[in-house]
Amino acid sequence: MDIRVPPDDPHLLCPHILDAAGCVIIVSEVGTGVIVSMNRVAERVTGHSRQDMLGQPVWEMTMPPVDRATAAAAYAIPGAAGVPLAYEGDVVTRSGRVRRVFWSNAFISDDAGVRTHMVSTGVDVSGGRDAVGVFSLLMRSATTTAFIGTDMDARVTYFSLGAEQMFGRTAHQMLGRPLPDDFFDPDALRARAAALGVPPVVGRLLTLIEGPPGEAGSTASQHDWPMVRSDGTRLIASIEVSPVTDANGTQVGFLGMVRDVTHERGTDARLASAVSREEEAVRRVRELEGAKSDFIATVSHELRTPITSIAGYTELLAEGVGGTLSPRQKELVDAVRRNGKRLIALADDLQTLSGFDSNGSTLAWDDVDLCDVVSSAWKTLDPLVAKRRLDLTFAAPDRPVVVRGDRAQLARVVFNLVSNAIKFTEDGGVIRCELGVDSGEAVLEVRDNGIGIPRGEQGKLFTRFFRSTSARKGAMQGTGLGLAIVASVLQEHGGTISVVSDHRCGARFVVRLPLAATSRRPRVDAA
Image (cartoon, rainbow, N blue to C red; front, side, top):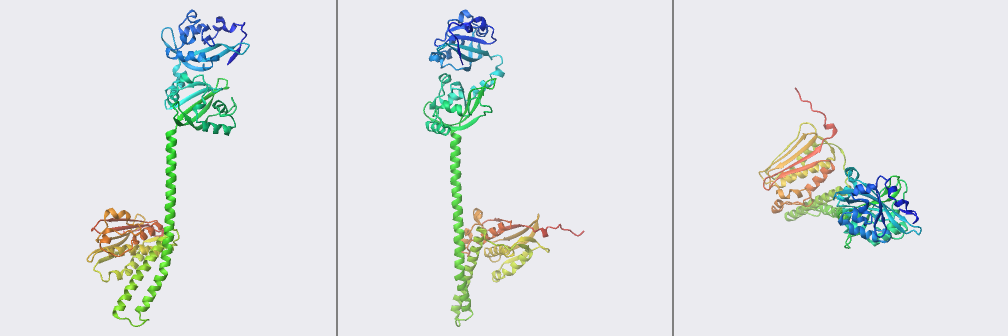
């Protein structure tokens, strides 16, 4: 603030007038910093008499030795423009005691508008430091966050320790000077200025952050800015700017809280890039899965028609429609017929899996008694065990075990599990298929003492076309689709399947399906 005083009106410099004030007042010359007047409170706070202080540079009498050179340089700037209008600093008393004083500076100008004197008003906050100076203490101790205060002309009034460490500039270099444009990346500065329609000058941008100076209802504004340290290195800073008001509510400046978020934003960018790559990979995998399902559906459909025709003609040949077959011819036709049936079964399996993949399978939902399904499976499997020496038994409760599902697909689950057990169990082996109820679920267990499945391979057991090393070494026929179909059918029905096995130790498969509501009536046991 500047006060216009005629040169022949010295009343504001009169000690008697200054003594009426309850705070420290020191009047010094602009340019030299020489003290020309002071009040009794200044004597009491500094411990120096008027006689000691008058005629001495203000920094010699009120500042610690470490600050004196910087203060002298600030006073030497024309109009003492380097001296901040408000700041909190240490005062070293005559006895060597350090007191904390909050200073507010105003200038006296002559008729020509030239600054002649500076009036420094100070409030001793040493005694109430815990209450009054706590905010300043916190800001000075914050080394990971920078606090920068400016007046309405963007001159720096506060530069915290965190700001010094973040930007590589000292408070002595910054206080009282305009906030430099080279703090900011020039491209970002120009872009922001263009958006606001003003010249790319930090001071002008700062006054527009919250609208017109002193506008009521101003709040903090936060942006990410590319900024530049004193050594030229760049950082990304998250800057939150708040208006600073005086006791009357008039805006007198700005306070910026600056956090270095370079690492965070870099991490965010890397994470976003990784997520983007992952999403792209997932999308491509889904496209490949879709293409694979479409290919399998097409192939299975196109294969089934000619294979069915081949199987039909072999049936006719076997029945002698084309003439009587010799024993050797009949043997060859039977081989073609058997392999034709295998190919038809393969095409059916592929079409079933393709339907599950594309959500194109149509299940005939109904209440299904699994006791009937297991009983039917016994009859269906008779041809597979007719020439085998196996101990094969089925066990089911004497009451219905009802689940909600597709009868044909559930029958396929039982058939695939039991036929696998038959295939992988040597003659003289034991196979058990048992159905029961446990905790509101139907439980189907199929176990054998066959060649088993190595533990290291069981994680792939329900994937398509997987065949264990035990099966491959034994040259056993199969496509590796049976268990994949079982898993898909059970997933559609809300069921689960688990396996316990090891090489040459047999296998135990356990299927669990939720019971239908009709089969969940409480059981009543006879007394």
